[in-house]
Structure formats: C-alpha cells, structure tokens
Image (tube, rainbow, N blue to C red):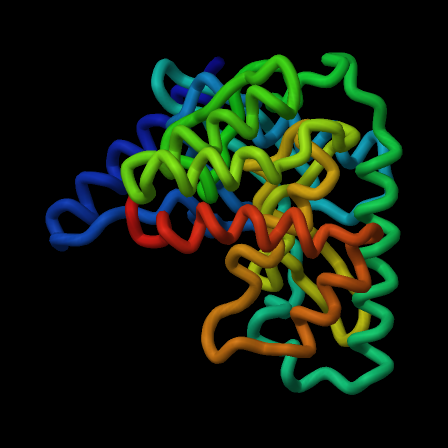
Length: 265
C-alpha cells in the first residue's frame, strides 16, 4: 500500500509537469535503476501485472519481471525490470533470413504454449480473471465478459452497427463461426510488442489486452495492425507461420466489419 501511495504521488507530479508543458504524460515511464512503470486506469479488467506473472509461471515465454503489481484508488501500477532489446518493428527489415526464421519459430512456440493453458471459465470469452477485457479492435472501453463465442460475435456485430446496414451485418453474422476453441491469447502480437537481440526474442510485452478468446482471434488481431507503414509482406507471411491453423476465412469475414470501423474510436 505504501508503494502504491508513493507511485501515485509520483504520477500526480508527472501529470502536473506535463500539463504545464502542454502535453500528456505517457502511460509507460522509464525510471532509474533499470525500472519501468506502467500506469493503467481501467479497473474492471485483469491487472496486467497479474497477467504477466501468470504467463511467466505457466510458460517459458520471456516477459518482463514484475517487481510490484499494485493499485491506488482509480490507478493501477505495474513496476517492472526493464528488458534491454531492440523493438522488432524497428529492426525486422534489417534481419537476415535465418534470424527471421528463428523469431518465427519462437513465436510459434509461444502461441502453442498459450493455447495449451486451460481456462477455468469454460467457453467464456473474458479476461484472465473471468471479468471484462480490453480489445482495441472492438472498443476503446472494456468489453464482456461473454458466456461464449456466439455472444462475443454478437458484440462484434453491435460494434459495427453504426457503420453498416442491417442486411450486411446479418449476412456477416451468418458467416461467423461460433464453435472455435477458447484459448489464452495475447491479442496484440505485433512487432512493436516484441523485443529481440538478433534472432532471439528477449521479451513479449504489452499484455493488457490478453485473455481467453476464440482461437482465431490471435490471427485476426495480429493481422489487424501488423506493422507500421509501409506494409511488410514478409511479416504478413510470418504471422501465417507462427499462428498455427487456417484462419483466413475468419479474418476476411472480420475485415468486413473492421474495415468499416477503422478510425471510428
């Protein structure tokens, strides 16, 4: 509790400083002694620090080491050790064929490990703790939890309703599967969230949107915002290699919704 209070005072001071400068403070702050502080304001979803600890405990996926996962009223804090590595988005185009292949192989192993985890919430689509989850593909606010994939798909249709007509949405809904396995999903496996040294992944970061989702959702989210422009076809092929399964149809159906919604929130 004392640590949370100290961190809260620090963030208050930081926000006043940036307010005085006319800018906004980042939700990720790099601190002395090799520490990183991430600030989270959504209290209805699983604490990202708890998610990272869960992944560290049950898989061999490299993640930042959490020093403290705490909260103070309307703020949550994740205090972590900083992982030194290159952001994959910055170096992908400079890696050789062998390094890229190694990264793809590691990511495939990570996805398989996540999928091997058993949900204590049955077929519910939800956060780690069974509560709501964040999904920037769907909304800027927490969504769910959903009793099953069908209810989740209904929410996707509802989110697209302001941007499409009823007939199109009914047609899209008729082609959405409701029978995927529900598996643990990072839900934002983009290069910007992967740190590497050469062909070795040293950390997968940004777990706040992860949770129990239909198995195709990892692919849909990876393809939704794969890399900053220009579009990199080699990375698009890599996604198809490191996420096992054929989800092209699922992705194309989802695009009929998401393409109408981009920039809507």
